[in-house]
Image (cartoon, rainbow, N blue to C red; front, side, top):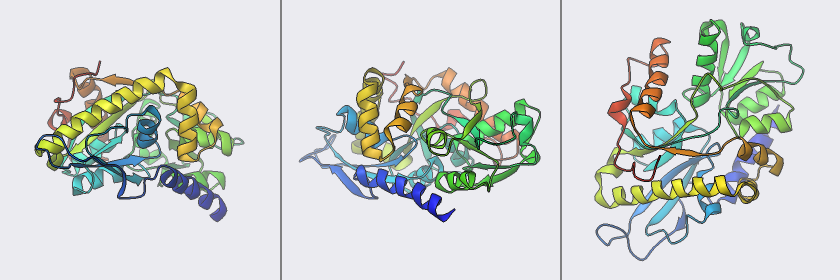
Length: 329
C-alpha cells in the first residue's frame, strides 16, 4: 500500500517538478505590463487532470506573455478554488462540480471561460478481477471519489439514473493518489475518477471501466477567476489574454495530437501510453458562456442540491462573467 501510494505521489511530484510548477514558481516575466504600464503577475492554479501549464508550454502560448505568470499545483479542482477564493490564485481550470461546491460555500469565484472534453475519460473503474459487472453491483460497496470533483457529480448521476443514492454505497472521499493506491490494494471496490487518472488506472493497474460519463454528465472544464483579479483593470486585461491563450492551445492540441502527447508525457512524467490514451479521447471544444452552457451546468448544481450534498441552492447565472466570450464557439 505504502509503495503504491508513494509511486502515485511520485508521479504528481514529477509533474510539478518537470513543469517547473512548484507553488510560486515563475515561468516568465516581462519588462512591462498591460493596462497601466506596470508589471502584472497572474497567479495560476493548475492540476494534473487539466495539465494546463503543460498544454500552454507545448503549444507555445507561454512565449512572449506580456505579464508574469506563476503556477501552483493542486491534486484536484476543489483545492484550486479554495486558493482562488483565498486570493492566493487568480485563475484556475476545474471540472463541472467544483464551482458548484465553491459557490454553495459562499466562495468569491467567477466562471470566465468554458470548454468541453470527451466523456469516456470520466469513469467509474473497478479492479480487473472484480465481480462487479453493473452499476447495481456497487450497492454496499466502497467507492473512492474526490469530494466536490467532477467525478463526484458523475457518480451521483450514475447512481440516480440507476435508482440508487449515495446511501446505497459507502463513499470513500479520497484524493487521486490515495484512491489509486486504495484501488490497487483492494481497500476500495471502485473508483470514480477522470483522465489522466482513468488512463493511469487502466494501464498501470489493469483497472476495468464499469461505466463512463456518456449519457450521465457533461465534459465541462471551466476557467475560474477570483473577484479581486477581475476587479483590477490590469489583471483583468491579463486574464482576458490568458483565456484567449488557453483557447488557442486547445486548437493546437486538437490539430497536433502526436506532438501534444509527446510533450504532455515529458512534462508530467506520465508514461507515453497513458497520455496517448488521454489525448485520443479528450479533444477540446471551446464554448461561449451562453444560456445552453449555463443551463447544463445548472443541472449539475440542482442535482447536488436535490441530493442534499450542498447547502441550499446555487444559481449558475450568479457566478458567470461573459466578458471573455469572444473567440469561443
